[in-house]
Length: 287
Image (spheres, rainbow, N blue to C red):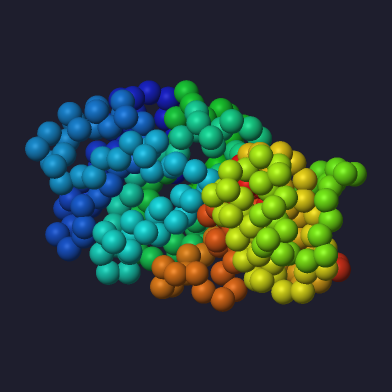
Protein backbone atom coordinates (compact mmCIF):
# COMPACT_ATOMS: atom_id res chain seq x y z
CA UNK A 1 0.00 0.00 0.00
CA UNK A 2 1.25 3.45 -0.85
CA UNK A 3 -0.37 6.73 0.16
CA UNK A 4 0.36 9.83 -1.90
CA UNK A 5 -0.92 13.31 -2.54
CA UNK A 6 0.53 14.32 -5.91
CA UNK A 7 0.82 12.96 -9.43
CA UNK A 8 4.62 12.99 -9.41
CA UNK A 9 4.54 10.85 -6.25
CA UNK A 10 2.33 8.37 -8.10
CA UNK A 11 4.79 8.11 -10.96
CA UNK A 12 7.70 7.78 -8.52
CA UNK A 13 5.98 4.87 -6.78
CA UNK A 14 4.75 3.18 -9.95
CA UNK A 15 7.95 3.15 -12.01
CA UNK A 16 10.10 0.88 -9.79
CA UNK A 17 7.16 -1.43 -9.15
CA UNK A 18 6.53 -1.89 -12.87
CA UNK A 19 10.26 -2.08 -13.63
CA UNK A 20 10.54 -5.04 -11.26
CA UNK A 21 7.99 -6.87 -13.38
CA UNK A 22 9.53 -5.83 -16.68
CA UNK A 23 12.89 -7.15 -15.48
CA UNK A 24 11.34 -10.59 -14.84
CA UNK A 25 11.50 -12.37 -18.21
CA UNK A 26 9.16 -15.19 -17.21
CA UNK A 27 6.40 -12.90 -15.95
CA UNK A 28 3.46 -11.58 -18.01
CA UNK A 29 3.27 -7.83 -18.67
CA UNK A 30 2.37 -5.86 -15.55
CA UNK A 31 -0.86 -3.89 -15.31
CA UNK A 32 -1.49 -0.43 -13.90
CA UNK A 33 -5.11 0.32 -13.00
CA UNK A 34 -5.49 3.97 -12.08
CA UNK A 35 -7.13 7.28 -12.88
CA UNK A 36 -6.83 8.17 -16.59
CA UNK A 37 -4.78 11.29 -15.90
CA UNK A 38 -2.27 9.29 -13.88
CA UNK A 39 -2.02 6.73 -16.67
CA UNK A 40 -1.16 9.47 -19.16
CA UNK A 41 1.69 10.63 -16.94
CA UNK A 42 2.83 7.06 -16.43
CA UNK A 43 2.78 6.38 -20.17
CA UNK A 44 5.03 9.37 -20.77
CA UNK A 45 7.40 8.37 -17.97
CA UNK A 46 7.66 4.78 -19.21
CA UNK A 47 8.59 5.85 -22.72
CA UNK A 48 9.26 2.84 -24.95
CA UNK A 49 8.41 0.47 -22.09
CA UNK A 50 4.81 1.68 -22.09
CA UNK A 51 3.94 -0.82 -24.81
CA UNK A 52 4.87 -3.62 -22.41
CA UNK A 53 2.56 -2.43 -19.62
CA UNK A 54 -1.20 -2.79 -19.48
CA UNK A 55 -2.70 0.62 -18.71
CA UNK A 56 -6.32 0.31 -17.60
CA UNK A 57 -8.48 3.26 -16.48
CA UNK A 58 -9.78 2.36 -13.05
CA UNK A 59 -13.30 3.30 -14.12
CA UNK A 60 -13.10 0.39 -16.60
CA UNK A 61 -11.90 -2.08 -13.96
CA UNK A 62 -14.01 -1.10 -10.93
CA UNK A 63 -17.41 -1.04 -12.61
CA UNK A 64 -19.69 -2.40 -9.90
CA UNK A 65 -19.63 -3.81 -6.40
CA UNK A 66 -16.65 -5.01 -4.40
CA UNK A 67 -17.63 -8.59 -5.25
CA UNK A 68 -17.62 -7.65 -8.94
CA UNK A 69 -14.04 -6.42 -8.49
CA UNK A 70 -13.09 -9.84 -7.09
CA UNK A 71 -14.57 -11.49 -10.18
CA UNK A 72 -12.79 -9.03 -12.47
CA UNK A 73 -9.43 -9.73 -10.84
CA UNK A 74 -9.96 -13.50 -10.80
CA UNK A 75 -10.96 -13.49 -14.45
CA UNK A 76 -7.97 -11.39 -15.46
CA UNK A 77 -5.54 -13.59 -13.55
CA UNK A 78 -7.00 -16.71 -15.11
CA UNK A 79 -6.67 -15.26 -18.60
CA UNK A 80 -3.41 -13.31 -18.33
CA UNK A 81 -1.53 -14.33 -15.19
CA UNK A 82 1.53 -16.52 -15.28
CA UNK A 83 1.89 -19.83 -13.44
CA UNK A 84 0.22 -19.57 -10.06
CA UNK A 85 -1.27 -16.20 -10.98
CA UNK A 86 2.13 -14.55 -11.25
CA UNK A 87 1.79 -10.92 -12.32
CA UNK A 88 2.31 -7.39 -10.98
CA UNK A 89 -0.87 -5.35 -10.49
CA UNK A 90 -0.87 -1.69 -9.51
CA UNK A 91 -4.40 -0.87 -8.37
CA UNK A 92 -6.12 2.40 -7.50
CA UNK A 93 -9.82 2.04 -6.61
CA UNK A 94 -12.27 4.73 -7.70
CA UNK A 95 -12.75 6.36 -4.30
CA UNK A 96 -14.39 9.38 -5.88
CA UNK A 97 -17.08 7.12 -7.36
CA UNK A 98 -19.17 4.29 -5.98
CA UNK A 99 -16.61 3.16 -3.41
CA UNK A 100 -16.63 6.51 -1.64
CA UNK A 101 -20.21 7.60 -2.02
CA UNK A 102 -21.39 6.46 1.43
CA UNK A 103 -20.02 4.98 4.67
CA UNK A 104 -21.76 1.71 3.84
CA UNK A 105 -20.20 1.53 0.39
CA UNK A 106 -16.76 2.42 1.73
CA UNK A 107 -17.10 -0.34 4.34
CA UNK A 108 -17.84 -2.83 1.55
CA UNK A 109 -14.62 -1.87 -0.20
CA UNK A 110 -12.57 -2.05 2.99
CA UNK A 111 -13.97 -5.56 3.38
CA UNK A 112 -12.81 -6.31 -0.17
CA UNK A 113 -9.34 -4.95 0.56
CA UNK A 114 -9.12 -7.08 3.71
CA UNK A 115 -10.44 -10.30 2.22
CA UNK A 116 -8.24 -9.90 -0.86
CA UNK A 117 -5.36 -10.87 1.42
CA UNK A 118 -6.99 -14.27 1.89
CA UNK A 119 -8.38 -14.68 -1.61
CA UNK A 120 -5.08 -14.05 -3.34
CA UNK A 121 -2.73 -15.46 -0.69
CA UNK A 122 -2.25 -18.77 -2.58
CA UNK A 123 -1.30 -16.89 -5.75
CA UNK A 124 2.02 -15.44 -6.86
CA UNK A 125 0.41 -12.08 -7.61
CA UNK A 126 2.29 -8.96 -6.51
CA UNK A 127 -0.02 -6.03 -5.88
CA UNK A 128 0.55 -2.39 -5.04
CA UNK A 129 -2.56 -0.58 -3.81
CA UNK A 130 -2.50 3.17 -4.36
CA UNK A 131 -4.37 5.66 -2.19
CA UNK A 132 -4.48 9.30 -3.22
CA UNK A 133 -5.38 11.65 -0.37
CA UNK A 134 -7.01 13.98 -2.90
CA UNK A 135 -9.79 11.43 -3.51
CA UNK A 136 -9.64 9.12 -0.48
CA UNK A 137 -10.23 10.89 2.82
CA UNK A 138 -8.18 10.40 5.99
CA UNK A 139 -10.77 8.19 7.71
CA UNK A 140 -10.94 5.87 4.72
CA UNK A 141 -7.15 5.68 4.44
CA UNK A 142 -6.88 4.91 8.14
CA UNK A 143 -9.25 1.97 7.69
CA UNK A 144 -7.45 0.85 4.54
CA UNK A 145 -4.16 0.67 6.44
CA UNK A 146 -5.76 -1.93 8.69
CA UNK A 147 -6.47 -4.03 5.59
CA UNK A 148 -2.93 -3.94 4.20
CA UNK A 149 0.18 -5.75 5.47
CA UNK A 150 3.34 -3.85 6.40
CA UNK A 151 1.45 -0.74 7.52
CA UNK A 152 2.06 -1.16 11.24
CA UNK A 153 -1.68 -1.38 11.97
CA UNK A 154 -2.57 -4.42 9.84
CA UNK A 155 -5.48 -6.45 11.20
CA UNK A 156 -6.21 -10.09 10.54
CA UNK A 157 -8.68 -10.06 7.61
CA UNK A 158 -11.13 -12.39 9.35
CA UNK A 159 -11.13 -10.18 12.43
CA UNK A 160 -11.63 -7.04 10.37
CA UNK A 161 -14.48 -8.61 8.40
CA UNK A 162 -16.09 -9.75 11.66
CA UNK A 163 -15.84 -6.19 12.97
CA UNK A 164 -17.66 -4.88 9.90
CA UNK A 165 -20.30 -7.60 10.27
CA UNK A 166 -20.86 -6.71 13.92
CA UNK A 167 -22.73 -3.56 12.87
CA UNK A 168 -26.44 -4.40 13.31
CA UNK A 169 -28.67 -4.28 10.27
CA UNK A 170 -31.59 -1.85 10.36
CA UNK A 171 -34.83 -3.68 11.19
CA UNK A 172 -37.13 -4.54 8.29
CA UNK A 173 -40.07 -2.17 7.82
CA UNK A 174 -43.34 -3.13 9.46
CA UNK A 175 -45.01 -3.49 6.06
CA UNK A 176 -42.45 -5.94 4.65
CA UNK A 177 -44.03 -8.70 2.56
CA UNK A 178 -43.56 -12.19 4.02
CA UNK A 179 -43.23 -15.29 1.86
CA UNK A 180 -43.70 -18.88 2.93
CA UNK A 181 -40.51 -19.83 1.09
CA UNK A 182 -37.94 -18.43 -1.33
CA UNK A 183 -40.07 -19.02 -4.40
CA UNK A 184 -38.67 -17.60 -7.63
CA UNK A 185 -42.05 -16.86 -9.17
CA UNK A 186 -43.27 -15.04 -6.07
CA UNK A 187 -40.07 -12.96 -5.81
CA UNK A 188 -40.22 -12.18 -9.53
CA UNK A 189 -43.84 -11.04 -9.34
CA UNK A 190 -43.22 -8.92 -6.25
CA UNK A 191 -40.09 -7.36 -7.80
CA UNK A 192 -41.94 -6.45 -10.98
CA UNK A 193 -44.70 -4.88 -8.92
CA UNK A 194 -42.06 -2.90 -7.02
CA UNK A 195 -40.66 -1.35 -10.19
CA UNK A 196 -37.92 -3.66 -11.43
CA UNK A 197 -37.87 -4.41 -15.14
CA UNK A 198 -38.67 -7.96 -16.19
CA UNK A 199 -34.98 -8.69 -16.76
CA UNK A 200 -33.93 -7.25 -13.40
CA UNK A 201 -36.77 -9.02 -11.60
CA UNK A 202 -35.58 -12.30 -13.12
CA UNK A 203 -32.00 -11.69 -11.95
CA UNK A 204 -33.10 -10.73 -8.46
CA UNK A 205 -35.38 -13.75 -8.15
CA UNK A 206 -32.56 -16.05 -9.22
CA UNK A 207 -30.16 -14.41 -6.77
CA UNK A 208 -32.66 -14.96 -3.94
CA UNK A 209 -33.32 -18.60 -4.78
CA UNK A 210 -29.64 -19.41 -5.31
CA UNK A 211 -28.71 -17.77 -2.01
CA UNK A 212 -31.51 -19.65 -0.25
CA UNK A 213 -30.29 -22.95 -1.70
CA UNK A 214 -26.76 -22.25 -0.47
CA UNK A 215 -27.93 -21.33 3.02
CA UNK A 216 -29.77 -24.55 3.71
CA UNK A 217 -33.03 -24.55 5.67
CA UNK A 218 -34.65 -21.12 5.19
CA UNK A 219 -37.25 -20.39 7.83
CA UNK A 220 -38.26 -16.88 6.84
CA UNK A 221 -38.41 -14.66 3.76
CA UNK A 222 -39.34 -10.97 3.72
CA UNK A 223 -39.42 -8.47 0.87
CA UNK A 224 -39.52 -4.68 0.89
CA UNK A 225 -38.40 -1.56 -0.93
CA UNK A 226 -38.83 -0.12 -4.40
CA UNK A 227 -36.72 -0.34 -7.54
CA UNK A 228 -33.84 -0.29 -7.79
CA UNK A 229 -33.37 -0.89 -4.05
CA UNK A 230 -35.56 -3.98 -3.72
CA UNK A 231 -34.59 -6.03 -0.66
CA UNK A 232 -35.06 -9.66 0.28
CA UNK A 233 -34.14 -10.95 3.72
CA UNK A 234 -33.58 -14.66 4.25
CA UNK A 235 -33.53 -16.25 7.66
CA UNK A 236 -31.73 -19.60 8.02
CA UNK A 237 -31.15 -22.00 10.89
CA UNK A 238 -27.57 -22.46 9.68
CA UNK A 239 -24.77 -20.03 10.45
CA UNK A 240 -22.65 -18.89 7.50
CA UNK A 241 -19.46 -18.39 9.57
CA UNK A 242 -17.03 -18.27 6.63
CA UNK A 243 -16.14 -14.59 5.98
CA UNK A 244 -15.23 -15.52 2.39
CA UNK A 245 -18.70 -16.92 1.68
CA UNK A 246 -19.80 -15.58 -1.67
CA UNK A 247 -16.44 -14.02 -2.50
CA UNK A 248 -14.57 -17.08 -3.81
CA UNK A 249 -15.13 -17.58 -7.56
CA UNK A 250 -16.25 -21.03 -8.76
CA UNK A 251 -13.31 -23.11 -9.95
CA UNK A 252 -14.92 -23.86 -13.30
CA UNK A 253 -16.29 -20.42 -14.06
CA UNK A 254 -19.76 -21.94 -13.83
CA UNK A 255 -22.07 -21.75 -10.83
CA UNK A 256 -21.61 -24.83 -8.67
CA UNK A 257 -23.80 -26.28 -5.89
CA UNK A 258 -23.39 -24.18 -2.77
CA UNK A 259 -22.15 -21.16 -4.75
CA UNK A 260 -25.44 -19.28 -4.52
CA UNK A 261 -23.96 -16.51 -2.39
CA UNK A 262 -21.33 -15.93 -5.08
CA UNK A 263 -24.06 -15.42 -7.65
CA UNK A 264 -26.03 -13.20 -5.29
CA UNK A 265 -22.99 -11.00 -4.64
CA UNK A 266 -22.37 -10.66 -8.37
CA UNK A 267 -25.97 -9.65 -9.09
CA UNK A 268 -26.87 -7.55 -6.06
CA UNK A 269 -25.42 -4.24 -4.92
CA UNK A 270 -25.27 -5.50 -1.34
CA UNK A 271 -25.38 -8.87 0.37
CA UNK A 272 -25.25 -8.50 4.16
CA UNK A 273 -24.63 -11.57 6.32
CA UNK A 274 -25.20 -11.62 10.06
CA UNK A 275 -24.71 -14.75 12.15
CA UNK A 276 -26.25 -15.20 15.58
CA UNK A 277 -26.81 -17.99 18.08
CA UNK A 278 -29.85 -19.30 16.21
CA UNK A 279 -28.55 -19.19 12.64
CA UNK A 280 -28.07 -16.40 10.14
CA UNK A 281 -29.78 -13.50 8.43
CA UNK A 282 -28.81 -12.77 4.83
CA UNK A 283 -30.12 -9.58 3.29
CA UNK A 284 -29.91 -9.00 -0.46
CA UNK A 285 -30.41 -5.53 -1.94
CA UNK A 286 -30.63 -5.47 -5.72
CA UNK A 287 -29.58 -1.90 -6.47
